[in-house]
Image (tube, rainbow, N blue to C red; front, top):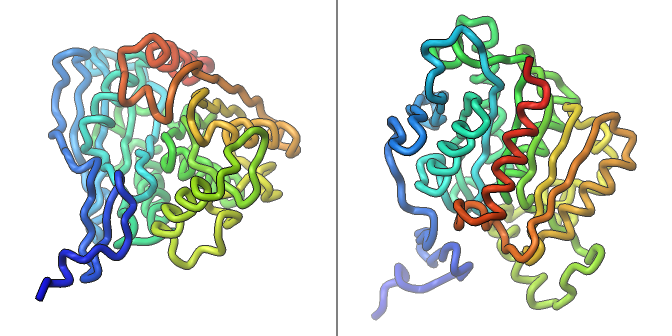
Amino acid sequence: MESTTSEIAIDCAPLLRVYKDGRVERLLGTQTVPPGRDPKTNVESKDVVFSQETGLYVRLYIPKGIRSSSQKLPLLVYFHGGGFCIETASSPTYHNYLNSLVSEANIVAVSVDYRRAPEHPIPVAYDDSWSALKWVASHFGGNGPEEWLNCYADFDKVYLSGDSAGANIAHHIAIKIGKEKLDGVNLVGIVLAHPYFWGKEPVGDEIKDPAVRAKTEEIWRLASPTTSGSDDPWINPVDDQSLASLGCTRVLVCVAEKDLLKHRGWYYYEKLKKSGWGGEAEIMEAQGEEHVFFLAKPTCENAVAMLSRVAAFMNQDKA
């Protein structure tokens, strides 16, 4: 008799499969690379555990030449994507992207590792990300446990960013900062790359095919089994009145022409401008590109242009 270990309970290929015995098989985002000095950019990185309770870590990045400078640099806190279910801060995809971004923008970066669904369903990813940010904020007086943050990070110029599910997290963390504040963090702006937002009813020219929409909701339900559905504020925050309380003064939304989620990014941008929020919003659309293309094809023309735009966004207020 065949063991239940080989019987699939939930098939969310190409992301992952869940078997009837509870085993989770991730099909993407399983590779990891160690931190260190990147030979292309001379960016340095290292991993630091921020929670002894969970063993979760952040990967810290500093640019070339910072050790010989007394200047403190803007600080980026980055949340990786992967539908809340795959990828890590140690993924070569994210490691390479952060090396390039830190070099291009001349910033300090913190890439957050959070516990993933389905083993750790929503809202664990948000809670872990908030815990990581609180740990980062503990360094604002220069007396935190990590030397790189004490010495090199400018806590008056903090940015949040992420792609896909990570962009979703960045939005919700910025809302939380707007409502609760976080001592030591002056959140200037957020960069939402191809944000993973959804909703029950299509917006704009968003795809209406019931099968496609059902598949998208299935992935969300895997991450959040107790969800109320596609209009759950975690996945559809746009119609929530709290948009006006976003805790930063600048937002850059990046979308891609051929991305299923493009219309949600535009919808977020338009609603944010009308919400009563007092900041400045920008949007950038990459023509002819798919979801998170800039991670898959980092040297293509559109990815290089996007990297430059994001770097410029974080340097606009540099002294």
